[in-house]
Amino acid sequence: MIKWIISDMDGTLLVDNNKLPEDFDEVMQMLKDRNIMFSPASGRQYQALAYHFPKYKDDLLFISENGTYVCQHDKELFSYTLSPDNVSLVLEQALKLPDIFVVVSGKKSSYVVSQHPAFLAELNLYFTHYTVIEDFSQIDDDIIKFSLCDALNHHARENIYNKLQPLNGKVQVVLSSEIWVDIMPVGANKGLAIRKLQEKLNIKPEECVAFGDYLNDYEMLQSVYYSYAMENAIPELKKVARFIAPPNYENGVMRTIRQLLAEQK
Image 1 (cartoon, rainbow, N blue to C red):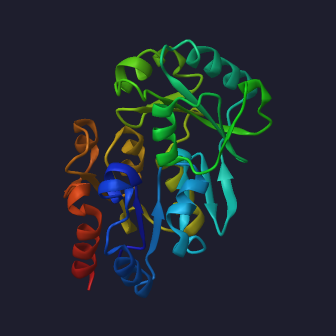
Image 2: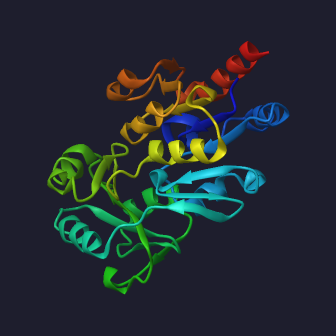
Image 3: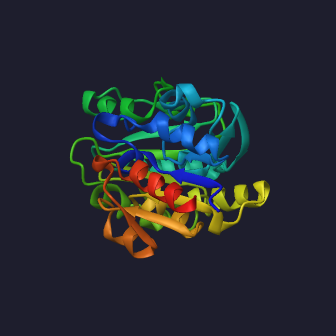
């Protein structure tokens, strides 16, 4: 019996133009009628996720910032933060990368120094709450994640991810898309957050469904039985998934949920 459905956002739940599926409200009512919980699990900040689900802000359990910040009813359930030494280390290395833009995410806000138009276009897709500052040394916040953006070339694997591999071990470097790389505390990921919540809520992995498309969804798919990689997912993720869902642009998540609910009757 399915009790919890978890979905990544970009390239997974969202269809064209950064929109929820047209039948999202209908499917959410079907889940509510069956007492099945739904959670967005994303690299997006909590404020951006809550903004995307205004009708459900008080209903959903939000797994934000790739599992480093988990909230429900607008309150933090738990979080993972970077030490001051690791914050300094990441900043030192990130600022050396040419043509790469840095977002520092804290609990209060996210912080940027650049206002390059190409960067802001990408930033505004995923961050609704950020502060423009003159220097990152001005931040007074608990830091949970860095997001590095290759807004100009769209080759994040080569221009960011590969170059920052020496940081792995002290921090965790995760490829989130062709444009974004996230840097988080070691061990923190969507999968760890889900396993912690499974224990807290007394929900078994075989009672959970998860959908994803990129490497930041890898551990998430390993934390549930019904693990779905989207048809448009990268090959590495398809290898760890038990099942394949139709692509996001064909409303794959909603179609698969409907099928699962029909089979569960």
